[in-house]
Each structure stands twice: as C-alpha cells, then as structure tokens.
Length: 515
Image (cartoon, rainbow, N blue to C red; front, side):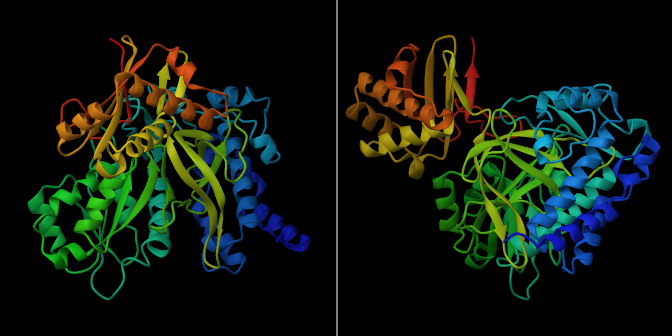
C-alpha cells in the first residue's frame, strides 16, 4: 500500500530537515570532518515517525532518507579530484536527482578500490594525516590478492552498534533463550591485515545481553572448555571453521553439545554433508549465514534457519542487485551484489561490487522489521573458463552431482566434505575433486558405471546447462565438446594435499593452473 501524499510530503520535509542543505553539500574537507553522525540521523528519524527503532520505519520512508544520504555522500566525494573524475564518466557532475540517475553512476570493484585506497590512497576525501582511520584488507578467497580499504574508526564503532543490536533483536532472539548466561564467540582471527576477527568481533560484542568470547582458532581442549560454560551459545566463523566443530565436539558431554544453539558461518557455503554432521552432533543447533565483506561489514543476515533469505541491516548499507549495465534487476532475478556504505563521511565508497551473485527477493515487511532481502547464489569469480566461454561453477557442480546420483555412483551432497574444480588451462583438462570417506570405493563405482566417453558426455551436458541458466544464452553439449577439454571426477581423502586452500584456510571453488 502506497503512503498518502500528505505522508510523503511529511517524510520529505523531515528528511530535508534531518540533512539540511549545508550538511547535504559540504564545501570543504573541514566541513566534512565536522558533519554529524548518520547513525544519529537514523535515531532522530525513527523518533520523529513515532517508531521504537529505525528497523520498523516503512520502506518508502527508509528509501527517502537513504536517497538524501546517497546524494550527500556523492557531494562529499565530488570534493575529491579522483572521485570527481570517476563520477564524471557517468555524465553526472552533481549529485543524482533520483534513483534512475543514481544507477548511472559507475559500479566499482576490488581493483578500483585498490586504486582509490592503496598506495598514496588518493580516493580518501579526508587525508590519512588527519588520523582516526583503520586500514583493513580483503582475504582474497577467489583471487588470493590482497586489497586494502580504509574505515574511519568512529564509523566502525557505529557500524558495530547498529549491527550488533540488529543481530540481538532480529537474529538471535529466538535462539538464545532462557535465563542462563548467553554466549557469542567467534573463531575468526586477524591474519596479515585481514581484519575480520576484529570487525566481526566488534559487531558481536555489541549484541545486547550476551557474553562475548574472542576465541580465535580453536583446538579441541579449548573448544570443549568454552562449551562447558553454563548457558546457550552461538559461534561465528568462516564456513570451514564451523564445519570443524563436528570434529572438535567429539566426546563432549551431551549437555554441552545441546548448549550450541546457533552456528553462524561466513565466507562461502556449508555443504549438505557438513550441515548434516553438525546437526548430528549438536541436536539443537540452527545454522545461519552471516554475510559480510571487508569493504562492507555485515551486509546480510539469515534470520530463520528454515529460510535462505538474507536480511539487510536497515540504515547500514544501501544494497542493489544489478545486471551487467549496473541497472537494478527485478525481484526473483539474479545479479551482482552492489553495496554503498551509508555510514562514514571521511572515506566513503559508492556502488561497490562485492564480488557475489545474489537473487533479489521481496522486502521483509513485519511490524518490527522492514528491510531489503536477497539470497546468495555464488561468488562472481566462480566462473570456469573453457576456451573463450565462461561457465558458472556452482550450477555446473549441481548438474554433475545430480547426474552422478542418478547413475547410482555417489550422492556428492551427502558424501563430499569439500569440492573444488581444478582447471589445467594449458592442458585443457578439468578435474572435479571431492573429498570423501573411502575414496577408493567411489572411484571404483565411477569406473564400473561410466566409460570415459560417457563421463565426458556427462560433463558436456552439465556445462551446457550451467551456461544456459546463468547467461540465458543458447548452448548445447557440442559447444563444450568443441573446447577439446577432457573431464574427470577425482575422489580424494580428507586432508589431501591435492585440495588447494588459501593461507587463511579457505577452499576456493575453482583453482586455475596455467603451467
């Protein structure tokens, strides 16, 4: 239901009052430094609209305030010569007048952010010499390339406040219940300036009514000691760290195992088998996604373990799902996830392409929560190059797994602990590695069930479907065959050195070998 015209006018007047013209378009770096906190504006806005918190404000009103803030951020960036030239490429020399013009602005990526925020850091509006900044770096799961960005420290603290409060009220409220002490821990730690341990920990510490444990990498003794604490617990870590809990918990008393209520994973996906193993050991655990990126902390949170949607924290980011031209896709369609941090005046970033493909979902609208929602599809870099054509690896894997199951060889979703495509580009050979118990058994079943020719055809069909679904182009198995690639499935033991991991223990879905 659309708001009445009088309500729309009231909101517009309120938005202009909250961000008056002198703040909306600062004239100098000194004026930028003096700008008041946007977090404070959110609170004032909710109070003026007689809402207990900003999360309950109607979507249309949120969008009105967000757009005024996006204009303000653009005006701030126009004070910086590098940003001014970059924005000028879109044909705009002033802040956009509407969302259509906003979509004209260029979409930036990790390489562009490196240009702005590494080296001499020419993209900073307020120079680094002013002080009060934190330099953080991306772990580079797909590329392995470090890319730095800059946060004003006071912005980070506000980010922690709003995200921590949201997690407590909308994510953990139904899971960490009762009168016993409540615990939230993270296994993340900081590696070589990869600061997720600090940043996620900063958020988790701000969850109301919890006790925080910055656990870092865990061994069995430390983990089981922590789990002996009285009260319900939630643990956050990268997907591989959360999967490891099924091993660390072996031999743990039942009462301690039942105290794990929430396992929050970030960076990648937990396989069906990993989730199954966790639930077998921890009967009361709910597995939830905590979606974040170094360049945009706490982007989306899974509020219900039975539903895959990820909810944005209202007011923290402006989130877009866009096509190849930077235009918004419709609800139910897939596109690139693009994020603009609404917090931070001194080193803002607009329209940052996080590097993930997501599906835009309908807004969450309840009495207490109104916000944007999306569903994770896969990393944008999860593209397999066969000749001159790219294929979306998650879809190819789904098709291969389905075919192997139908032929009675193996149900990879039930059996595979980890999977990885290895693309030998020079030799035009692609291997799907799957870590399983008793790999010799499944290798024998594969050999008995499929000739080499029939295995090749299985891959041709799987990749043809992945191209068709992802790019909406015509494709057939003959096109794949013409690449002259050979394909194989290789079952390997857990811990095999054949599986490539990054320095921080992540398993990229694709590994390209060019030699």
